[in-house]
Amino acid sequence: MTLPLDRVLLQASPVLPVLVIEDVALAPDLARALYAGGVTVLEVTLRTPQALDAIAAIHREVPEVLLGAGTLIHTEQFLEARDAGAQFAVSPGCTPRLAAAAEDAGLPYLPGVMTPSEVLLALEYGYRSLKLFPADGTASVKMLKSLKGPFTGIRFCPTGGVNLDNLLNFLRLPNVACVGGTWLAPPSLIRARAWDQITQLAREARDLAGSLEPH
Image (cartoon, rainbow, N blue to C red; front, side, top):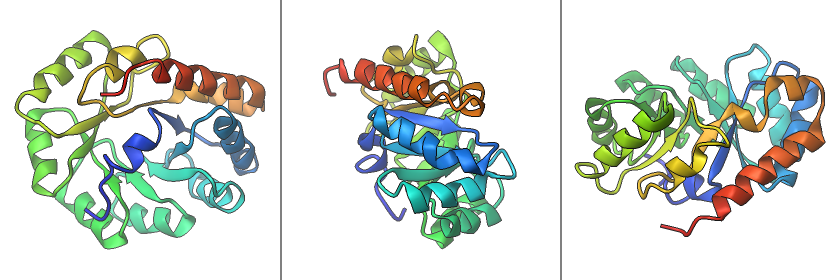
């Protein structure tokens, strides 16, 4: 690994907005709205044709945020994301080729896992900060509790089912460093340019997470 994510990225913000951006022109204002709400780390998913241009626009106009590219599922995307300005990469899974591509690009990498075998594979590549995907409700909380025993020192960022109503259930766990989700900036609010509402959602999530004692 090129950077200890558990010391830098995952500790930088307890909540990670997972952004689906359809209009590049809205990207900088979206980043500013989230930053105004106290969220300093953003993940732009490569789910739209505009995603790389959106990363470049945020990198250029809102350099104060720590900016990542998410949903990287092809090896060539790591260099594309880095060249656009991404400072870290996130995938829903982990394969040998993806891990090698992240290393070649020099990008800090948060690979996705869902099973103990996938955690072991990520560990073989030196990753101790992992995305748990999909994380949905009580079952995922129980799973994370079970993973703590055999995998001491591993930190997780659950996504895919986390929201304002259940985020504390995850953040209370000692092996959870942060949580991610689209609820912080729903595409409908982005399209409506509802920046004040997005700032409020970010502030509510940040304040709620901040109410917990550090572990």
